[in-house]
Image 1 (cartoon, helix red, strand yellow):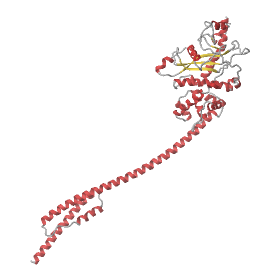
Image 2 (cartoon, one colour; image 1 turned 120 degrees about the horizontal axis):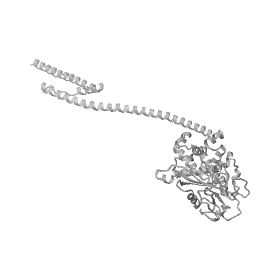
Image 3 (cartoon, one colour; image 1 turned 180 degrees about the vertical axis):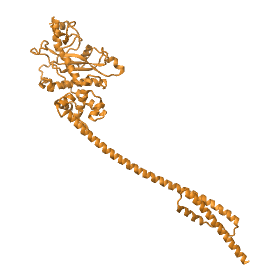
Image 4 (cartoon, helix red, strand yellow; image 1 turned 120 degrees about the vertical axis):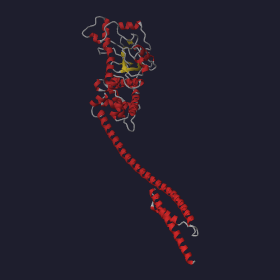
Length: 462
């Protein structure tokens, strides 16, 4: 009895112990396949094994069949729990790895951008330094090396350039900026007028942007226009003791006037107004000059289709327009009316200078026309010098039509300044000085209309 009981107990213990070892071994193989396939670390695997082995077993009094079923149930639940825990831990590890990769990538990207920015900054500073050096060398070549370079590139000598800079600074109110000197602004303006270059080309020469070139050009243009009271020549009548053979026959004459065409670019809807009788698009400019080829009055902005007489009437009707004192007159061509203040030649007779080559006048009218043509030719020569000096007046410019009219006026003002101060024009500065003292307080009476009169016709005949 005792033997049988002992045998049963040993058998039961061996049966209970053996299936437990077999179950644990089978579970270990499954766990190894699953967790190593999912890249789970060995410490996690061992901790899960230890936790599963600490589970309390069934009572020894249970039968083998029920114990086996319970052990299989226990194994499935443990595997599910371990899989759930492994997924959570693997997700956390994956998130940690991704975060570390992102942090490393961002650190590298910040280092790369910092390096690129430092290199780029050094290149920009070096480029700016080279631009400033080249700009100073180019400006020195323009205005400081010699009068030959200054005349060929800016159409003025160094002394005249300095005078222009002083006048636009003191009278025009133009000043240099932080990055651009006054001399460079004036040189850029004169270079544009002398060579008729676009903003892009001027920017390439002076290493400036197109916006800077355009802005400084317009500022300098406004400053030049403010000099009109100082640069426009004051008319002086021909005295009785004049010794100039050209002007000696015309006592009390103030000069000559005429109109000229300046080619322009206009919008398509306005081309009809600016089309001349020759079919070109141009602006009709009225120019009045003195005997020494300096402008007294200039009226631009009129359309090319307008007649010269209409432009003259408009100039006389303006409040601050063209003034002709009574008793004085200007020489005009046959396109104008012969009236008080404006002496025109005889029509139907030879007039132009080319017609007098090798021939003598045969009547008093022809003799008058010959003298008239020789004197009035001063305005034609004045326009020729103006267009010959400033290339922007010889071809259509790319500026708006209003700006083109201002450019014409600025070129005339600069023409007067050059004629007065440059020695190549053979005119001394003292000749243009005017005595402001006037003992007569009465204002002179001016001519305000263009009308023919018998009295004026008889004056021409005598």
